[in-house]
Image 1 (cartoon, one colour):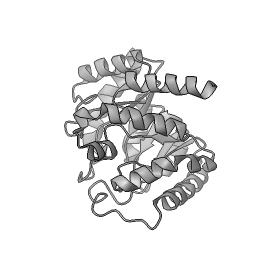
Image 2 (tube, helix red, strand yellow; image 1 turned 180 degrees about the vertical axis):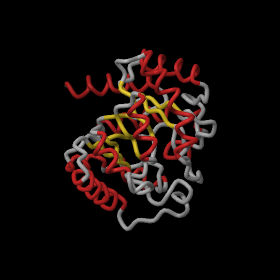
Image 3 (cartoon, rainbow, N blue to C red; image 1 turned 60 degrees about the vertical axis):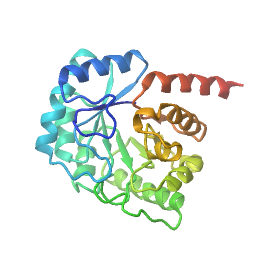
Image 4 (cartoon, one colour; image 1 turned 45 degrees about the vertical axis):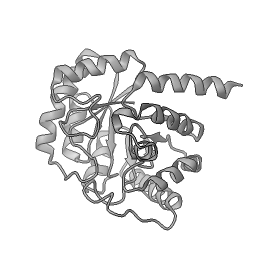
Length: 258
């Protein structure tokens, strides 16, 4: 899954472009490098960010979705949003997957909307909101608490009529670096839910704070942790750097054959 940010204030610049033409070029590059899914977002969810309304978000993402869907009809597009109104309009414009960092906790209409739209849903764990999530995140046991949360979300999705659910433990969303490593080291336990697992580690604080680098210099660390995620059972890697992630996947697949 390649990250396409139609926002001027995401934490990392690669794949970010508020211009539709620029996003279209980035989409083409990612698809040529092997991306299966393109994740388009119009609202930043970096630590400290406020909640964006659907109207402004739609102005950012709909032109990009329509252009990419027209140019690359074979590509799977997902919309990175916590707004149900954005999800509905994005699907009408060509999106096939809803990626919600709040798992329906920000917009109470989200799960019902996705159930009506009959599209796959990525449900992520986040402690708090983007504005508050990194203000002293605390757990008794981060692995069991995140896993229990996702079990509950899967049940709620089923009740809402959502048949295809992908789970995301939410690396960097309401977690310390230590919490993130604990989740990564026990990611294999999430397979008990029987759902595909998405890992979004790309250039995040788990890499940057551990190595003392900026997001711009975090590719090597990201690549290392992506391999760990695959070995721990991840099915989808959400990345800014598709070429390098595909190389990791090819090496992992070769290793798994031995």
